Image 1 (cartoon, rainbow, N blue to C red):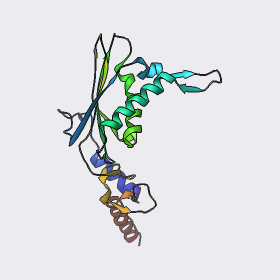
Image 2 (cartoon, rainbow, N blue to C red; image 1 turned 90 degrees about the horizontal axis):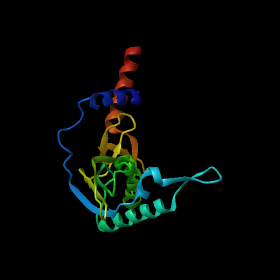
Image 3 (cartoon, rainbow, N blue to C red; image 1 turned 135 degrees about the vertical axis):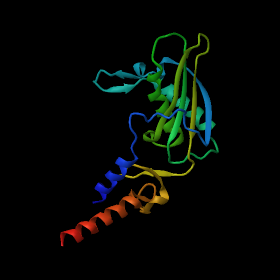
Image 4 (cartoon, rainbow, N blue to C red; image 1 turned 90 degrees about the vertical axis):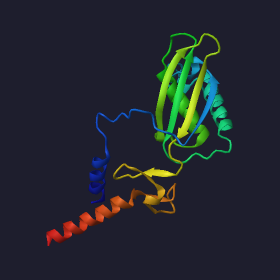
Length: 199
């Protein structure tokens, strides 16, 4: 009953093909940093096939990821990151027209995840662009949030809600259950109605 109620709430909240907002979301805060560009950050160069048949992260890519993570940690020293959507701006400067800016996103997101401790399921790309920079190409990374409160996605309706919208559950990672109170209430109401009509 709770799942059906959550599905109805989800259907009411979902957007259609016109979902694009005219402007990027306004952020409560944004941290910007720069890291040297290297083709080792591109997913076309990130993985190597070993003789054993296993795919492994190339050494240069692992070093690039670690360096970006370290820069992010330094930039975020003293800043709290909420368990909520994380918006990313990325400008990829390349020395030539080889490689795709989009291929850099995975490694940068992995570095951000390592540095700030928020799972990349919460990541959203706000801006992605590229340009040619013949000397000293860089990756310019912006990381921000529009909300500074901890949140969770309801497993039934799929809506992002503050932790206060969920019942407490001490053993859960965030200390709350997976279904929001609205879904639980709607499920109980639906179950009562089904019981009354079946009599």
